[in-house]
Length: 401
Image (cartoon, rainbow, N blue to C red):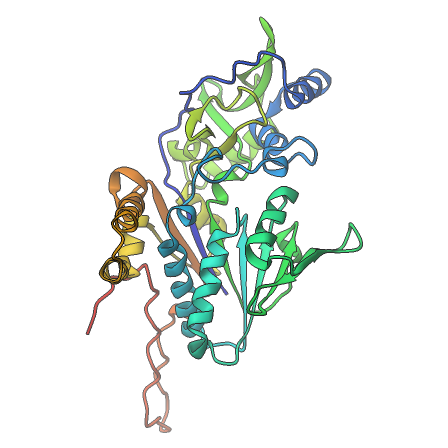
């Protein structure tokens, strides 16, 4: 099993606020829901705020909105250029080969957006069918948004999908691509069937609910969301006056590793209309993301996996051969406007001032993937040496013979 993660880099601990909310001053249904909740139970953790705002079954941003693309709130790399998805597809096949070419390959994507990345990847699978041979390939999408799952189904399967008969079915939608590759949709990662799988989490961990903490004279205290007493229709951050369950857990962890960077995994920001947006303004109308602490991810993964990275998106894509792929596309392109678009998208993906260094790749692999061949022992010697493991593409510099 292999896992590749693409997410924003760790950043200093602060909240971003650059764009004002919409001119409509009427409290939204989500804001009314949150203020009622806070009045009943008291200030809520940032994690609970994010869960409500993003994935509330009725009012959540991801549940009801189509937030991707030029008309949405943000654009992701797969929407910028198909090259991105193509190189991820090549990486997946490379890791499948590095694992010994199992007879089964489950591609599992967490939070698949419009399905653009999965579409580009499975196109590479079709083009490299001779490499995959007789492997049984399937696509498994973990998606909580009904609106996005419909969009994914349209983009990946056309009219070749249908919802499950029962609402509690673990697979709530099934379909197949034009080439006959089976596609399944799940609400929870735990529901994905076991088997050799490669997981792709593209800007997924960034949106997971996080707790926010602040160091005070009395130690670490959790930052909560409360109602502004002077503005009843406005939310604000407050510091918990006493330890909470989350802050107590943080203290217990910090005994093992005292580091002021603990706050760094609790940085929140919002995106609306492609602009940074106040995270507490107009809840439910904008995306919320958090910069990710890779060291924390590595510690949580434990010693049972091999971690690679993080490496910048620029480094990963260049190691995967994006420059060579661009040269081929430009050489075969005669239309000036298409050439301009190719160059522009390449610049957006790789330029350090844009996405090139803002986003990072991080991979978790089974330890056996990187294990060195065992030396033969005793008198019985093998005639052939065991082959060394293939280098992990993207995390190793690409060299041509």
